[in-house]
Image (tube, rainbow, N blue to C red; front, side, top):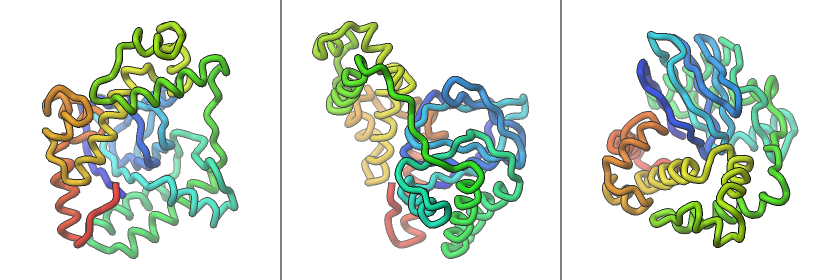
Length: 267
């Protein structure tokens, strides 16, 4: 599981998604972020909760910026804890993007501090405690609203084609022609299904795939080309806007953890 401890002032996260859940405990300042169609704010003692594959942004909500400690628990782990604590299975998620719970925020901070001290038992225990607490108060079955039936199949097929041809994607016009629809209809259906237009989704998907390549030890320059970015600076810009740190710094931090623990962390 990744951890992020950061202070941002002028940082602005572009619209992006995560494959994991996000628990962000705000310790100073205010973070503002778009979550769906809403602009929400999280301050000290509050936790920003983001479900997997949910488009969101992030920027300072006050001039002095914000500081947070963030954990990214795997979706499978959340499902297993939900099954144990609230007897729910299936599509589990959180129903509120911001939770005002200072005690839970301290548990997230405790996960960080235990991990920094190399105390895996404490980190794992605190992670399960805060997850169970959040699930009991704000957990449930979460299902995204289904797009219009007429465009749902086109959106899904377009996503599959973009995933397959990530390094050399078609234009919107060509993509629509291959699917037998119009560019505007495809654009509307794709946005309804995935919360962002195809080009934004493609950039986000490239960053996510590059992240997996970096985890596997691929040099940033090679990862950039493999996912379809023109060069490493292009990857650097988009990776930093989504992940919060440049790809080289991200990979070095992962490598340091691998060396410290003696095993490679999972993506």
